Image: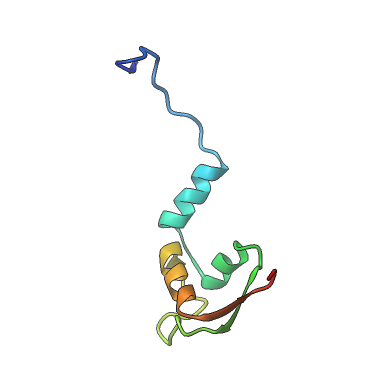
Length: 81
């Protein structure tokens, strides 16, 4: 078993939790833009989808970072403001 050199405690890997799964999704998962939008609790309305084009539509699976980049280039409104 592996031990921490300083504390001498056993090093063990914990179980996956919701935070781990959410982080993994945001880094590696590819989802359609409307699915990423649902995860924002429906607080955002896209008025002009300038970030999307003919090659990448709202239905094209993309990574979270790509979604956020495209969202920043679009005209949006927050519902709760």
